[in-house]
Image (cartoon, rainbow, N blue to C red; front, side, top):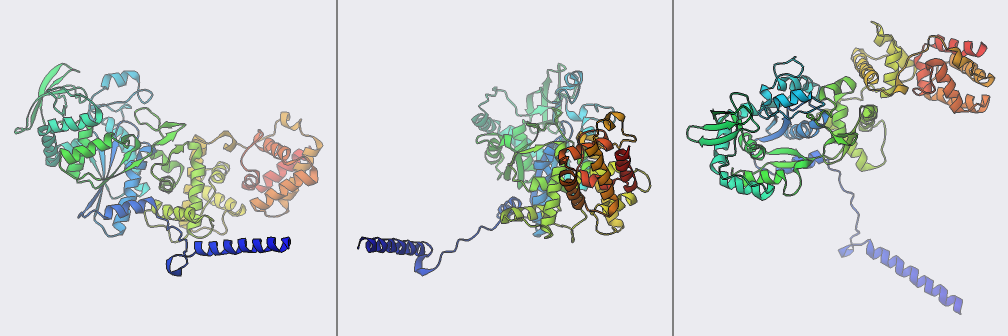
Length: 569
């Protein structure tokens, strides 16, 4: 009787659980609740959707670039590439767009060692950078020296519709003069706003304008003594050269927070990202928004905070000399690789860079390309969608019609070092790529040019930035110090590896399997020892690039002869 009661009790519990699950899975009116998977939306597309809510005739997408030193890749994340992606998507939707880059040429020099010598920094400190000489005596001034290399590669990155305008020219425009006059006229209001955010107390005679000293070109510590808004003239004193003078309102600059808002006013900006240092609540971005609303009477643009790019834990800095130059990138990798890195990460994602990371970034881009063209699959749907959409954006919303030829970056770096640099360079390289299985057929002329670019970029990288294990120099003769340490098992491995190499054509994967089998099961010296002696007789060191593909890049007769001769001797 007790057993039956327990069974009945269990049946009741199970029945109740089933009913509970059924109720849980049903909504009102008996409709089954289906958990809807969230549709993936890329952050660029979300930003564009927000901008479309604005009822404007033209969107002005703006970035600001300091010319304080080398233009590094970190600057371009939030001052060029975010803007470019947003502008191109708006254009794709048929919207009228103007993409601007403001270059701050009306700023004082702030450079410091190691970018320049201490003497140079002291001599030109505070001088408007347009009037600072070129540090290497190769250009007309400081600004040209740093911006010219940057301008020269913009087209490589697909930046063709961006209008560049410098602040010196902007201050000469009537709209900016109008903004300056409004701010000076409402200086008490501006003082209250800035004090509210900065907590700074300005003197009673404060005029929010830094005149350009016409004698020494100081624009940092000059003091406006009097201003005539009707004549648009400012009297000033310069403590740097102890002089007084008069300048027009076009010859100077506003305090930088006021300047930022004045640029929005002058250029009719509708979207402008800003660095994370400006993003803190009550920080500089908020103060500029308040200036725009309360002093200039305009609606501030939509903003977006972005994170800096770091090198060994330190943020890239032009004036501090911590950088990887923007114009260096096309020499080491496809421009799309850098763009994909930025677009596949959200703007506030911390990004750590090192030149040693370039092969990894290139492979991440190649993987996204394979996923986009359906050659490779990624199980996580959101990750796959982000990869595909970021790939489209990195290719300026115009991805190629078919998947381009891909060569693994580090393999390309090794191959570049093996192939003689003569008129037959690309022909020999293509033959080796076919032999190693990286090419399935003879490429056409366009593909051959692209292959050469891949190899030369990887070659430039390995020569300038590559780690020692990827630098290749084949020994002309194996030294006695290496030969004397080879035992009979070592020689047996080398001889049989030579036999395997001449037996037939191998793919890297097949040859790698054969090497492991030979080392572990046939000869019994283990893979670690086998790899070590192979590198020693070829490179004179204990390690090197991935062995199987490396062996296949070498001349077949040479490698077989080297392996067998050493074994016999």
